Length: 293
Image (cartoon, rainbow, N blue to C red):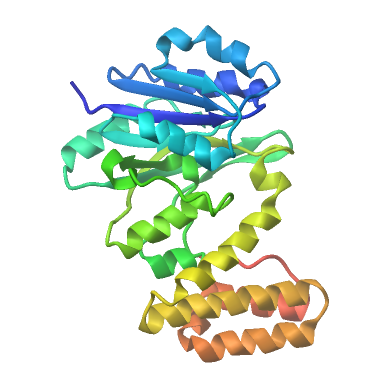
């Protein structure tokens, strides 16, 4: 029997997408699957949809909760699989994902955490394959230098038994990555598309994007003092670059230049990296957002 995979879907009033999500899990036809759906008391067609598939679910509930993070944690508490992941109720897994993940964990028993690639899609958005640059260290993570969309991540369950921190309602997954990396754990990249991430007007990523950025900034401040040497300087410099960009965006180029120079003084190595030049280009031409790769 292959390793048991536990999947949790947190849901709230996403009935128009939920069935597609559920089927993307069940149609993996993975022989050792535990699927859990935690709904926050939806008032749309969500419960009706869940009931259609309840015989194939390990557990489901629909009750008022404190939001997405608590819902995931409630599912995690019930999970018993060797491997754990969660997928939101508007995203989908791609065919063959669970088999590929299980095969990798079996082939490399020391593996604790993997991430595949993700397709971004949605009405009004270009469909695009995002090849993951997995977080390699806490500094790499805190400096916004990774690209690894959430639906592509799978962990050994014991690695995440402590759950996600509700103090980060938007960047809770990013917070987990930082904590795991600080503890010495490693994320490994599997160069296969695992999931499709849906962009739409009501998704948190689109509708509430500014809160992600605010939490990212707070996260950098919280964890910066746990870094040392060049890692700490890199993280701090990245915060200054973001301030430079934000100031320039509002038309305050003098402030933008001040933060840009402070970033360079803090981390001169940044002169060889794209974020610095992106901010400089923004300052001088009011160009596009810098790519923090």
